[in-house]
Image 1 (cartoon, rainbow, N blue to C red):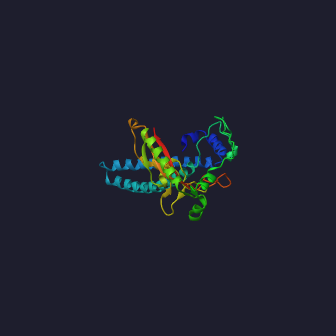
Image 2 (image 1 turned 30 degrees about the vertical axis):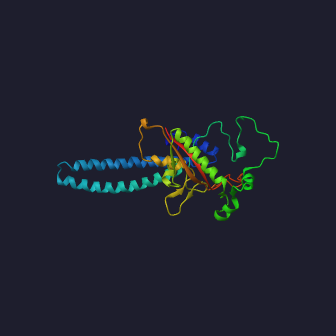
Image 3 (image 1 turned 60 degrees about the vertical axis):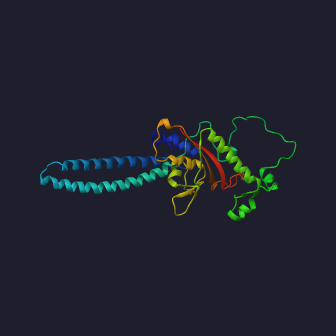
Length: 288
C-alpha cells in the first residue's frame, strides 16, 4: 500500500493516479478518516496517560478525602477510554478498507486506457517469424494430438476448465521438475505450497480477496481463499518474523495450483489456455 504520509502530502497526485488507473477511490474521504483516526488516537493516549498519572498518585500516601475523587475519576476515565478505543477500532477498519483500494503509482510514460488495445509498443526486439504454411494455434495442435480435453473440463467444472491428457501430463511435470532443479542450483529453497491461504496473508501480499473485481475465490464461512499464485503463500511464509540483514537475501521458489475468477475478462481474447480458472505455475520470491 502507498504510504499514508505520501497520500497526505500529495492528495491531488494520488487522486489523478487513481483516475488514470480507472480506480474509483474517494481520496478526500480517506484523508478525512485518517484525520479522525489521528484525533481519536491522541485522545485515547491522553486519557490513558491521565489514568496512569492517577494510578501512580494512588500508590502514594494521600488523605482518604483525596483518594475517593481519584477513584471516581479513574472509573470515568476507564469508561471513556473503552468508548474511544471502540470508535478508534471502527475508524481504523474503515480507513484500512479504503486505503487498500488505492493503487500503486504508475510510471509517467504509462499510457492511459481500458483495454489491451490502448497499450503503446515501446520497441520491437527481433524479427517476427514468417511461415511458409498456415500455422496452427495451441488449441488445434493439442486437440489433434489428443493432449487436452476442453469439453470434459466444461462438463465437469464449467467453462475455462480443462483436462491435460497423455504426453501433455508428462510434459508439464517434466517442465516443473526441470525448472525447480534449475532454481535449486541457483540457491532457491524449493516448495510445493498450500493451495489455500488466510485473508490476512492475501491482504499483506497486496491481493484484495473481496469485491466485484477480485480475482480470488473465497471459501464460504471460513477465513480461507484459493490462491491465485504461489507468490501469496511464499510471501506469507515469514509473516510476523523479523529478519537480520545478514540473513538476506532469502530465495524461495514454489510450485502450486493457481485459481483465478478472471473477473472483468468478458469480451477479451480468451481462447484455449488463456484466462483459465485453474493452472499450475512455479513462482520465484525473494526477500531482500
